[in-house]
Image (cartoon, rainbow, N blue to C red; front, side, top):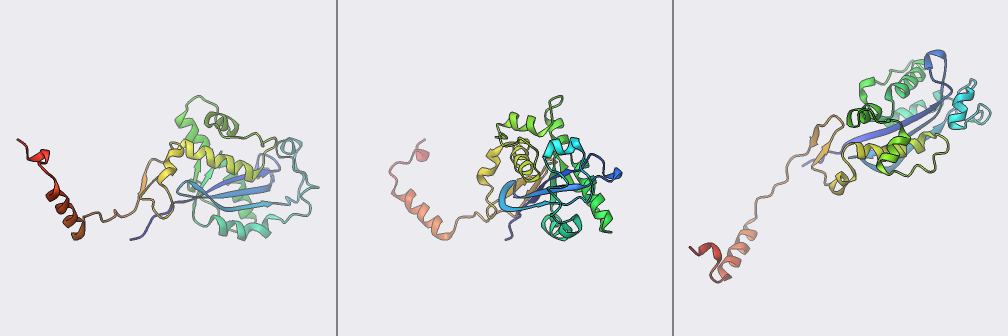
Length: 229
């Protein structure tokens, strides 16, 4: 009997600006592995030399400058490790169109296939479906679900992925899902679209020894209530 483990990658990027079509680049990428919605100890985190200037507005958000990143690897040097880490797992991203657009722009420069947009679960869209009209930014989600974001003075890709992972579990129905979701024992896992990934049911018929023990217990009972009429 094989167990089904759902692997997802919570992903975030920081960039030099807002539009990859204008030549803006990734300066930081952070990924966190979830198995059955539970964070593991595995993550991927890299700072990236963008080989271009960083806008004042972007630097004010993440605190990274071209000078600070001058000794970091360029995206071409981390691309293989990044793709190996995410493999074919589903991605969980806050404002997925933004991050996937930047990732695909970087992959395109290297002649590599793009990440299909429908491979990503967008937690902004998930939030708006669950809480119409409410703020959908990450800080608002942290406040709603009581996730401690006090260390988020500046945006950081790995930190934001960690915060998003906690909020994502709450968006799917809350931490109580995880009580029985150990990787080796999971029997059903909810997916973001409301579906369920199941494993084959465990055999639960009583053994001959259990049937004999039950019969012995019944025989020892005096005037059982189910014989009274």
